Image 1 (tube, rainbow, N blue to C red):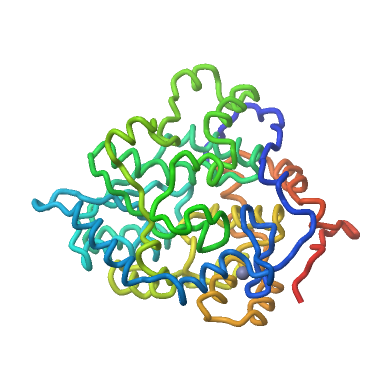
Image 2 (cartoon, rainbow, N blue to C red; image 1 turned 90 degrees about the vertical axis):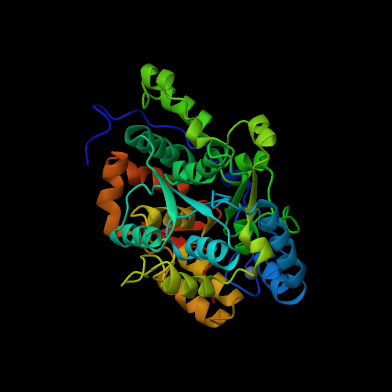
Length: 403
Ligand SMILES: [Zn+2]
């Protein structure tokens, strides 16, 4: 891949605010394998995490019949009579978005426009799954952001937030709202409320949609594109001309007044229908041509989740350094909650795979960010939260291994 910089920019400061908010003492959930280091997660008096509490509520207390009626009512208000688009569905062609698009189109008679924010570096299987989804009968708008701007933002996010994934997350979130305004389709359906399903804030426990004002904290780590662009200018990543000529608007939610005026609302499908990843998988395989990978993803034992982008493995691995939990913890916790594996099996999987370095795409990752390998190691070394890691004979040891 072409170099981004004639001369490497100076080192940038690490400013991820989440790292300052981690509890000093590590507690693991008594039901799954997630700990209290996950940002915004809470625990009850029996040390059950908020994601496991929510999983129990999904089984026992949430009235799904009532929610189904709410969904029908909402869709009845929006369904077009002339076949024009009536719902925007952000879709990658993965199992979850494939399931949502299929349900809305075929079970509820809606006319979705699917919209896709490109991954940084497509994997072969990711691109195939995207093509299969479109070929199985969905209108789609695919968006690639300016490659140089995107790579530079990813590089700044890697150094400042300890994760190059941020520009993808911002765009994925904001792009569908931009399209909703552009096409004047006021209903946007996302898949699951990740804060509830995987552990995080319970603010929207009983609400089908969130306030866009919360994005900054939930998804942008307090440091959205404006702040990172400013740092980029200060540290010679962006030239004055680049800053002057870039609005970065596509990475931000549209102005709130415009959203209010248009009446655009973003709903979670998981609020209305019980979210079961395995069932989404079967639905997507059957109806949108989804295929899993033929080998497990590095850092976990699964083959079907987050497989579109060659850089995904680093997002999870960097999380492992910061929070002591990687990709296996995430997958295994979900599978405990849906009763596919036991906690003992999950612990064995975590001890075997969590934190495995994603070496397969390491070269591609460094090339994408135009990042010298030594600088990668210098930056990642600093991400290891001190209360979680000991360095013994030049090797990092996690202080709280699961037993
Ligand atoms: Zn739990």
